[in-house]
Length: 298
Image 1: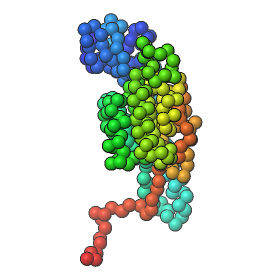
Image 2: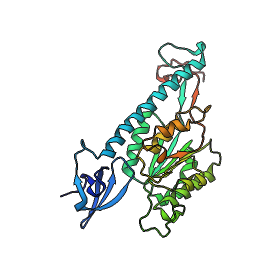
Image 3: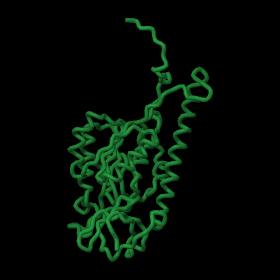
Image 4: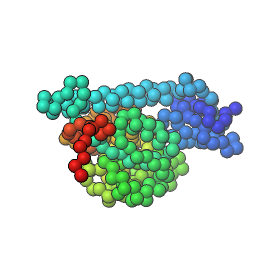
């Protein structure tokens, strides 16, 4: 018998994706993907409990890919620091340390899922990307942005949560926003952000979740969006793209084939347009003020 909090897979789907049971109503369970941004319901009789060390095949592959993507981001950051130091030349060269300070792009992340938001914020922190995160229902994101954008003034906005193509959709047409659970709300949020900043290089917008209306999000003004092939996306794909934008130099455009190729979901799950990075360096390196011996002048 399955209980709240158990890790399970669905027999009817071949046990490929691992879920956590969020709620049980009669004989139906509300389940949420541990790696993929998927919220679903399933009969308790369709669920099989699994060990955290033995996830579904698709979940296991996603974890491996997520680890590789994180390692790639960390490697890219080290290489960026080396290139910056080399570009500054001998005058500012201090053996064994950098002679500049870094100003990565600032992220504002709105997420319709509190658990995924916490995972995202942990990754931003690990990568030393400045980020403000808020748990906001998808339908409330546009209104939240009117308040948050002027106060936080981010370089990058991430709008994500849950979405999906509806089984009993009023229109069988995948071009119609009414065929999707939350794409309409993501589009409204992107439009609100673009009213605040029209320049695509001054504000990078990453929007969407599983099976979102990719074309509508780009048309609304997103730089990157999901999901071109209407597939499930990994919980951390929007974070990977935002971090890449934050850690790409203001002098360069984000290598679009590189960033999309190293997301967990790939170009089936995410796509976008050429966009300038938002990372800057400054001189001189910031000093430890507690160690300074300053003679007061006043």
